Length: 311
Image (cartoon, rainbow, N blue to C red):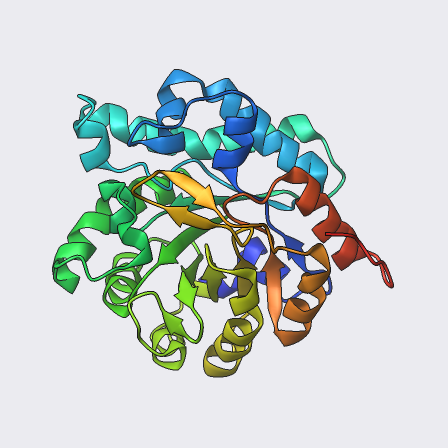
């Protein structure tokens, strides 16, 4: 079976758009879990796996078709800093997929439910907001060496798709595109952007063009950005690559890495997804600070003609 004929790849070109979940961290925080640790939500893979099942299940039951695993900040290096060896770290990464599968089973919906294994950027390991800047001072080869081992572990856990997400620059994108080759699992590549450029300042046309001919990449798009930046990015991604597009921005609030707090007001309106869909988005949801209530309205908007959900 080729990547393009996998069930998930076929679903992307089917008649119905797919709804992604929202921010995992805000759902866990709302449930009372402390995520101040540098491992963020990945800490709960070891400490409270049941909490992750509950969070994923909540999004599935809200209307999400796809849950993104708690592996965004799960790396061999990050676990090692907590005294967790490579074998245990690999098991925890694989467990992230198993927990999302369990949540799908418990949700018991009639819809087909999917699991996307998250692979966050190198900046997530640093836990200092670097994913919103990029340009870490590493070579493309160095970034590939960082990403490949955990991608191998996540791919071996057999998710439906790998989510190469919150990518801030084309150097890291190039490394990820190399690292994902030959794994036998489809992937999407999603940049975090500022206006019409990556966070590191490269034009989106150049950034998306990198993925146009990569067989493993079945969708491209944006996440962890302002809602107002989505439509233009989706349009560019669809035009440059000809691939289905993924779009899941933040609430519109801004992360202050120094204060480790969100500032500003929410600007994510479920009604906006109509425009994203028209521009080419096939997978649509939310990232940080977008909760199950908003995802429920996104699902309603995409599945109901003429609905006018409130923000």
